[in-house]
Length: 334
Image (cartoon, rainbow, N blue to C red):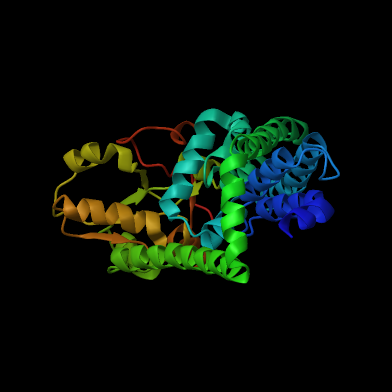
C-alpha cells in the first residue's frame, strides 16, 4: 500500500513536504526524503521517476519557501526575526546563537544551514534583512538545499534494508502504526512546548517597567543599563536606550569584575518575554549580584512608550565589553 502511494504521489509528496518544511511548518521533510530513497532502492524503476528529478523538486520547493522568508526579512527586517522567535519551540537563546553564527560566516552559512537544526529558520530571513542580493542568496541556498536533499535520498538508499524491515513490521500493525507515529510526533511537539514554558517560568522574576526606569534616569539615579542584543540584531536596529552599554554573556567574568555586587543593573533585549535579558539577569544573580532587573518589554516597550533612543555609533556595533556607553549622539524618538 505504501509502495503504491509513493509510486503514484511520491514526487508530489516530496515537493509539498519540502515546501511546508521551508515555510516553517512542523513537518520535517528529511524522513520523507529518506523513505523515498529507500523505496527507490528497494524497487528500482517502479516508482515512475528517478531520484534525480525528485532531488530537483525538493530543491525547487525549498527555494520557493526560503525565498518567501528571505523577502520577509528584506521587507520587515528584525520584525521577522522576532516573529520567528515567538513561533519557534526552541529556546530564544538558541535563536541568538544562530544570529551569531550568521554574523560570523555571513551568507555562506546557508550552504550548511539545512543540516543544523534551527539554523535555517533564522539565517534565511536574516540574509534578506542584512541586504544580501537575491542572486547570491539563491546560489548559496540552492547549494545547501541540494546538499540537504541529496543526503536524505542517499541515506534512504544506504539504509534501504533496515527501512524495509521497519516497513514490514509497521505493515503488520496496520493503522495502529500510523496512529503511533502521529501520537509520537504530537508528544514530541508538546514536550518541546512544555520545555519552553518551563524555561519562561524559571526565568520569570521581578521586572522593571520603562516608566520606572525613565523616572530613575530623570532623577539622576540611573542604574547601569546593559544592552544584551546580539551584534546582528543591533545592526538591524541601530538604536539604544541612552547610556546603555553592550554586555555579552560570553564576557560574564569581565562584567562581574567591573561592577559592584550591590550596584543596580537593568538589562534589556529585543526578544519576546525578555528571555535573553532574564537569562543574563539570572546568571548575574547567581554570581552574587543583588539588584538586577530585566526591562519589561525590552527596547520595543521603551520605544513604544515614546521615550527617546540614541543612534548606535557604527564602531560600537561590535565593540567588546567593557566600553563607553553605546548611545552616541543626540537621543531621538523613532
